[in-house]
Image 1: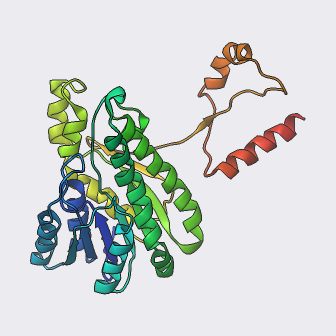
Image 2 (image 1 turned 90 degrees about the vertical axis):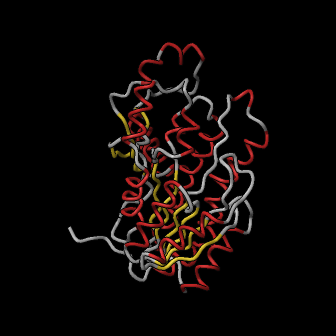
Image 3 (image 1 turned 180 degrees about the vertical axis):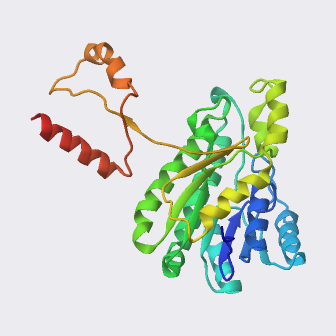
Length: 310
């Protein structure tokens, strides 16, 4: 297969100074993209700042013959998305790709989660993602092949000590589904990666009480962050026609998330708690599943079923 390259394309990568974001930035640059490397250099919980991480990756790209510029702004700030887009336009004249990778972690049991942790997690993962995508939207549409790659997490399935993190990542998934719908007419494709790289965030979120020693050993050797970059590179390329999807990589396994609804049961004008309890097995049966691209599709199917039985 012909190599997927990015000559002449401009990418913004948030959280690009360390971990998986660094690998994303390096891969795109190696394949010809001009890259804006954003990283505020915060601690894992979002506090503090250090510009050296973004600068180091930009210099690493330049030393390898690529083109990159560094940005140290915090994606939690309302104006950062606009600033990043303006920097890309000033340096390279366009925006083709947005990689929303920046993330923090405040792992805590739900009753002990502080307000700072709740707000910071949502601001970084959900608000930061939405604001940059929104700021870049007109230029992605103008390009006619704009690509948005957001970062969700299997924590959205549910994960002990990660209630607020999982909520924010679930929000990213829902956001991405709608960006895919609204971007279709402009050639914009929006997808998510649900990565599992052995980074400082993965180590902190797991904890000794959630992983056995065997699982720790497996994760350390089977989840190199560079592998996730290959998935991001595909989703960021203009030849990729997937949209509204999540590709999940973990421990040598690449898969697709599926959002589905069961066939359920037909009900009349009245429904008692006892009715639900008595028919729960039929309601929750996964023998027949339906996948809907949108809420509109789901409503249309429901209306069709109602007409067929009326």
